[in-house]
Image (cartoon, rainbow, N blue to C red; front, side, top):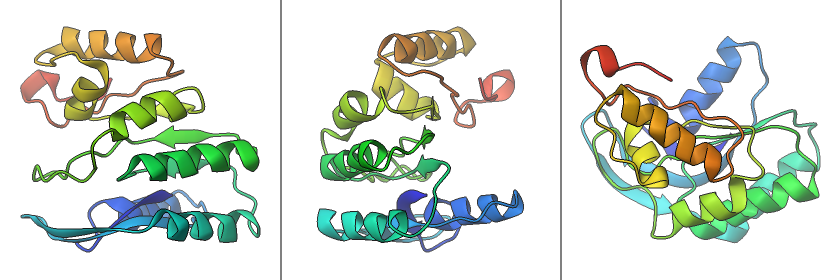
Length: 180
């Protein structure tokens, strides 16, 4: 997992490693940012320098055979570039991109141009993209209010170069709150 650290444990590196473990998968981690947050708010975000992110990734990839990469918060275009570099230089077979842009409480977690960097650098390398409704809207340009909008956003993401799309519907209400 290449993502931010969530001090509340409900997302980011902590949640990814819990999920990996529950599935019997050995997980390694590269921290892109450190947040001070809980279930109510994000109090601060400290983005790690690109070279620190790259060195963490190289340390793991030079030692451990990696079968799949899952990203979370990639807070800067440079962090996206590092993931693309690793995919190419280490010939990593599977990339799952969760384009985390805001916290559940609505706090922004990424800098400008991250969406563009994801589109330009990761779409052609990813196996699956898993945006939530807000992220899917941002990446596709489709305003999502109902199920048919989710389908349209997924089609746009596929046309933009993604191989597979899973849009998480937890941000919607009622019958529309499903993953598609």
